[in-house]
Image (cartoon, rainbow, N blue to C red; front, side, top):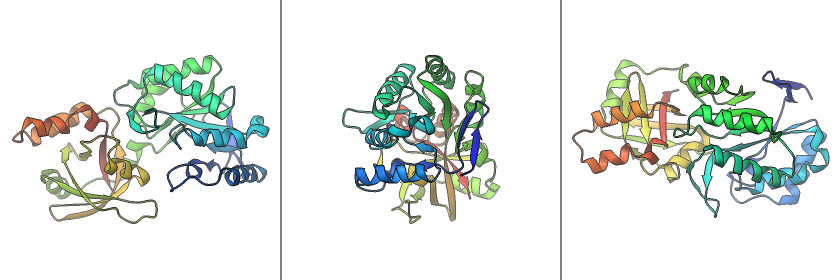
Amino acid sequence: MQKRQLGSGGLEVSAIGLGCMGMSFGYGPAADKQEMIALIRAAFERGVTFFDTAEAYGPFTNEELVGEALALVREQVVIATKFGFDLDSEGQQRGLNSRPEHIKEVVESSLKRLNVDTIDLLYQHRVDPDVPIEDVAGTVRDLIEEGKVKHFGLSEPGVQTIRRAHAVQPAETYTRITEGEAAMSTWTSDELTRIGGAEELEIASLRRDATLRRPVTIWVVRHGDDLYVRSVYGRTSSWFRGAQVRHEAHIEADGVDKDVLLVETGDMNDEIDAAYRAKYHRYAESIVGGIVSPQARAATLKLVPR
């Protein structure tokens, strides 16, 4: 198995890694635990040394599975896990939470579930618009200095978020750099006018098997040369959770029929709020207030044409 260096901090992993989420979460009922332990160990025997999990997978049980499966080869593997969601006592997601005190609590719990002394690679699972990324990076830096974490990663950050985090604590790896993807494709002037001017937009997100879910009607707004949608019921709404499965969807508005990527927005919510208020100023404040509420802001997605 070939090896790869992630970043400049000496983190070496196998060229092929094993994402363990689906063993406990996301693809129907959890698989048989002993069978999954055997699968993880078989991957290691074939040269895989990079294993990915998260507290949100299960939730919690996937970390326990990975920790048990790799206990005997702990010093020969790299385990990545993640923080960033607010999970209640039943394990239900209530939104995002990257407050420093919460990060520290999650790390302590993850160390116990994984049965390790240090986490090789700790990701922020999703950028939290309510917590400055500098505070997040600073907290992970402190955990690295304490020996509880070795390396820092970001999942779905924007370019500016990466730069701001890097000034505090360089990250070794990133997944789905959102603004980079967005730069690859742009809307035509006609599409921006027609979609941005539509009162509502029909959107159907893709399931894991690439079939379309039932379309829903959603508020859409144009800001500059970009288009945005929001789930007014927040990140725990069925529509938003469905949209997070593949980050792809199909939209229809004012005769425009288009496949799109769904990209999280990072730090632009104040500007998007203003665009929504300007567009829907004739609507009742109860409606507009819902569109710009904290839970809707946390569930803002940019539409990127494919």
